[in-house]
Length: 131
Image (cartoon, rainbow, N blue to C red; front, side):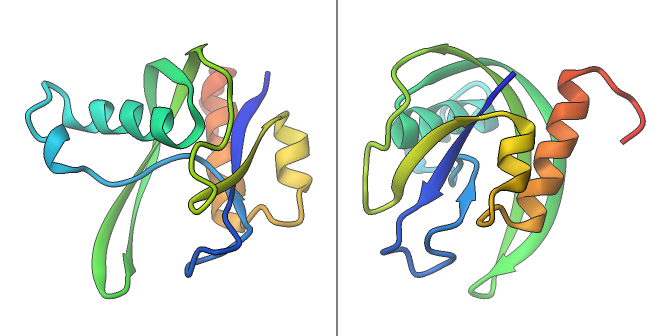
């Protein structure tokens, strides 16, 4: 009943110090994977917060631009498998927390889009159809 939430490093240029979800970009090493999206997700989560996950369920998608670069954002709900959750690179992720949905939503550094992702993930987790 908890989500693994990460705090972006205060050294980050974009949105320093906010809390959010682990993620990243497809890299050349991922391109040969059978399922590039899930391979990227698993790799990024392990690299950023040192945990292994499985049971990937798509929650939502959206599009935005970052520095004039188009981004397709895919949010997945995953199940924790193993590993001690910790920030592996303090230049990227400063801290990690296990939080309930209520704790995460109430956090002052939880941005509206992250709140939306978490609400949708919680609905998916509870098998609620009406989002």
